[in-house]
Image 1: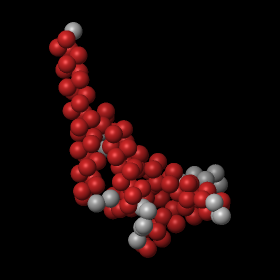
Image 2: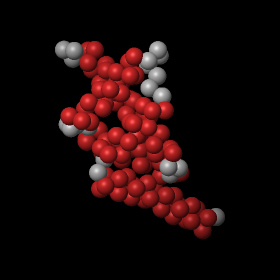
Image 3: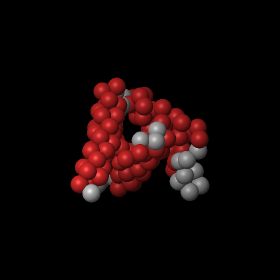
Length: 122
């Protein structure tokens, strides 16, 4: 907490990254598996971003700078969002994406079984 401004900027960047990851998943229309995929992916993403490569760090700082320079801290420009989504796709490994997909799939499977059991007992 020696640098509250940096902490605030880091929190802002994290918020931008998570929001964009959530939008990426929403575009994929995962239905009932979306929330489980978000929780799983958010954890994986934060773990991957603890020690980003210099290139990833540079791109994230550019996102933050653009967000801070925008009139109302609005990081929703199309080029920025597209670049950030591309970055997120690359930060997570194939194994990470497979785990996210399996988590979403398991959620869907559980919902189907739950509905089947409910219909069977009714």
